[in-house]
Length: 397
Image (cartoon, rainbow, N blue to C red; front, side, top):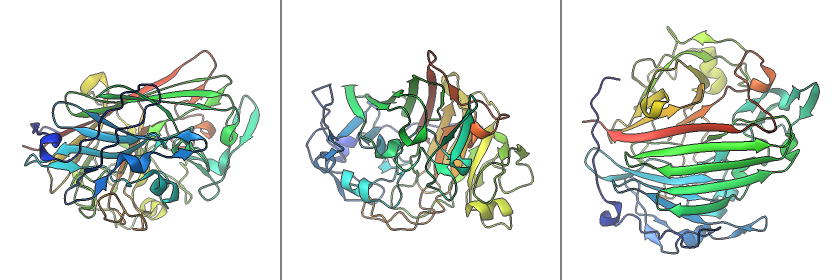
């Protein structure tokens, strides 16, 4: 997209939006204990670190705050490795919370939408019929999405407590060891995810993993974005540009058919900026299967920042906030919040309404363990799974 973008620098601290202290104890430290008002576009709700300090499965949880000197701030909890909120300036310099989230660890435990902001694993997205073969052996997983396995099973990484270390104001390191055969996946998997805020207002997501046995791995983050701010309404007037000429069509259970189909001439064509809602109601069987967009895009390798592929550009129609995604991954799952039903109260006090936020998950393709033509997701002992994605924020001039 040939637009000149400019950054608007502002201070959340000066605006009185968030004043959580960084943890001083680096090993498993909890976030600061200050309560502070945290606003989305029109929010006066409080996000209190104390509400995230509890014990789950015998491990303590906490809330951590990352920040840079250009006004970007991110709140992450070690419960599920979840991005709770992400504040960036809008076109007028106003701090805007562009990630919807909840106000407590207990809220996430009880949420009807399990994946809000979570680090996803062992396998992001769906595996058909909750099983796959590897080295001639069939592995059976939990069926938690119709007949299929979704996002790691019934207790994927969104429900575990990660070990957290915050070495500085800009970085949080999360670690988790998944036991052999947890949720049916072979091998003990040691996972590390480093979230960091860069000086140019990006959140960097750096994933790595090692295994004790041959296994399959596909890690991602399931943040829900509303670039106009949490609680500001639906995202149907946001514009999206996805740098992909093809996508993977699905069957009625949202499993890829194995084909790579052109987006040209279909409602899935976002090769030029289009409103998310412009064609979402089209008479198209793929849209009916997903109740909207819930499909993997095959990225075309467009060169972008950080030496990575430019995956997508999204723009908030009211705020002017622009989010560019850069990744090493071959695919991007674009999900338009079709199954959100307004049953969860967000930290702003608003509800997570139908299509009130969208997801853009960098990934390998869904059901890759059962689709040999797709890029491989097999990880072997002695090798390291490693992938990096950036979500960079700016504003339209």
